[in-house]
Length: 438
Ligand code: S3P
Image (cartoon, rainbow, N blue to C red; front, side, top):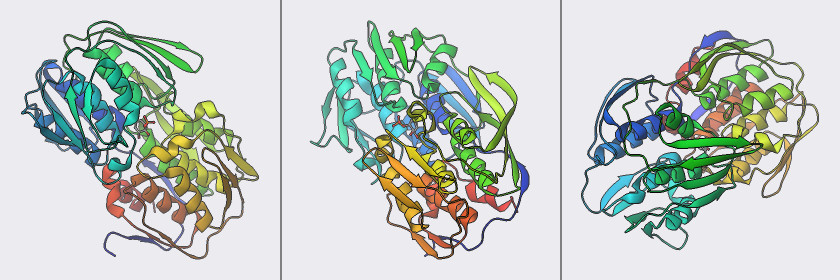
């Protein structure tokens, strides 16, 4: 099959320095903020992937000019009320939950109906989680009973500020409410379980009237109406979620070494590093610096002989939310049983990732026990895969594809992994970088 990727051999020992693409969460957010700015914003190292292209196309449909030349992007913002579009405009968020949910927040004060659609995977995901708080603001929707896409956002006569408790640790829900709050007169209060905070950092950098206080595992955010956004020139740092594939590949490959340069290690995103260090993986961060409120570092990883099992602290769950499939592979090679709890959110992703994590491991001969929100992985330090494995019939999910490739290269066997094109969602150069390792 043309879109199937075959891996037949384990990777040989490697020692390389690489760079991965720009951060997906920041690329999408930078475009959204710039589209509301008064003037021209520019970015370098923008991630050019399907999710980000869907963002650019959506914003262009709202009447905003965007020029993209390789990874350099220019957004010609026309001010906070500068969108210009016809009644019943259709916006296609394709595979991107982040784009779809953040846009709904931005559209809270729309005067014209907008229809939001997505691909098969996005159309099965839950939108009640953002529709509910937006309805509290006074936004009217035309949606089906399941609250899935396609849906229509009709707007509102009067938006009122809300008090909102975000208890899933979802940055998409939190950011959606921040955007809606930015478009609403009065004070919106959010109590949010900690999750990635790129939206808040950008708000702070742009000096928008948004205050954040942190207490233990919660952020308390006050959002006021935003009247003007300055243009923002930005150098997008590299994506830790892309780097994670190579962190894990190096960790699982004895005597290999890798350096990944200029990666965003924002503490709300560095769970994969913290969890793997607890498991005994040798990871060092060098050349640490701060860029526009985001932490950046070069990541050094060495292959490990001994991997410890982990009882994973649940407060790290949202910091590593996109990396669990990879962490499960490390647990498969650990000595002892690893336990991951409160992770039902994984089944809310592009595909049911908790189920897929277990399926991949079981196909490799690794024993797991699973509940709706937890998984136990029975590790085997001598794990070798010798059989044929086929990974197919999952909803379009880039992370299932790439994790399977890392599993094949780390543990052996003959793997047929479907949907190679899914890498274009977040990490188009994934296979190219892999090819350069040996
Ligand atoms: C994202 C938030 C996370 C993450 C997704 C990107 C973001 O989703 O899984 O890949 O950019 O805000 P949730 O908010 O649903 O946890």
